[in-house]
Amino acid sequence: MADHAHEGPELSAASHALRRRRTAAVVLAGFCAFLALYAPQPLLPMLAAVFGKSAAAISFTVTVSTIAVAVAAPLAGAAADRFGRRNAIVWAAFLVAAPTLLAATARSFGQLLFWRCLQGLFTPGIFAITVAYINEEWDEGGGAAMAAYVTGTVLGGFCGRTISALVASHSSWRWSFIFLGTLNTLGAAAIWAWLPPGRRLASAGSRVCAVRAMARHLRNPRLVATYAVGFCVFFTLLTTFTYVNFYLAAPPFRLSTAALGWLFVVYLVGAAITPFAGRLIDRMGHRYALTAAFLGGAAGICLTLVRSLPVVMAGLALCCTGVFVAQAAASSYIGAAASEARAAAVGLYVMFYYSGGSIGATVAGPLWSRGGWPACVALIACAQALTIALALRFWPPGAPPISTRRALRALSPT
Image (cartoon, rainbow, N blue to C red; front, side, top):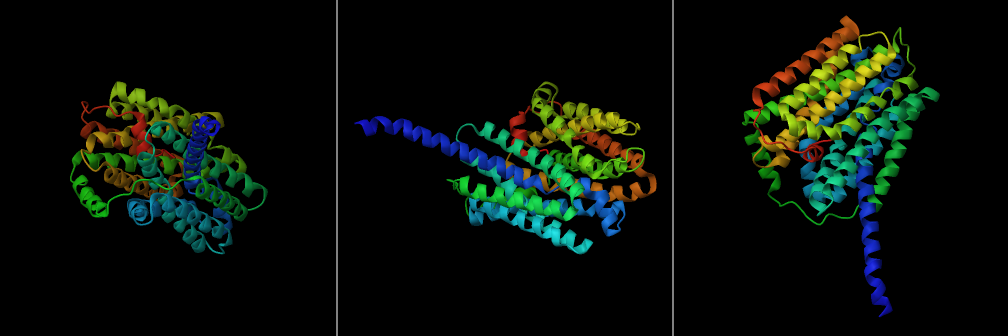
């Protein structure tokens, strides 16, 4: 009888421990997915000097990864169907770590781009499948699990940029990739140890159905407009945080590589404010919330033209917050615009979102060469104005509000 009397509490304690390990694994998955993806941003001025490349050319160190993410994201579900969600996440985490470490061996700019491309190809296997895993495996507490995952993505993006800058400033850029690759490997090992197998599997015909659903989504004007909004949202974010490094490394600021790494603390400001965006979306509606967010973002990007570092930091924080709130509005609107196959709708959104960042950073290169940071600011402001116009034209004001919880499930703002 004594044994049976203690069986309940023991099982309860074991169940709580399992939940904690599972949640920790999800947080680590978000952390590992974005740890190395944007890490070279504060290193761009240093890498430009090392490889003798222009700002426009060296920016491909970042954009080649985001292009690969855009290509691979819609295919991540097929890998999960073939190998299982848990196995796909674990393998992707280890596969991301490998090219991160190997990037340190690059002897030419082309070799560095090759390893960075592989990083991007494997990254959706972590973040896209982890979102699906949470939605399917949490019977209760899914919102808390998703919030924990998003916290991991934000911390991963921030730590990757900051660590790479600090390590490079004290040794070399190669040690940055070694350090980040080692962290990725340790994180992948922890995910492998702590993440339990999934209980639910997708049907065998899901891939064919997803392709057909995507074709139908591309004939939906409201969804196409939402994809264009997502394209513009990341267009502004990646363009801003790629070329602002060159702006602040030059006179009169002359920030060091380490200082450029700390620049990304503004991400934490935006991430802290974004969860409250749900109230704004519910009160104002999607299109007016996005309009308010990007009007603030446009004001922020214009503030960066003031030759004062505190003012520039405030402008970047405002710009970043505007992008994150706009992202919450856009990704949550998918639920209103897509009446079926929302997973396929989100997959297309991810593809357009990362394509926007890749194209933005590429297009801004020639503008930087000719007009410097003011030309980039003009491009970013135009993209923000276009985003507002798209939302006001194609998002009807009567669309039902979707909570920030669904926005978080759709896509991390990192």
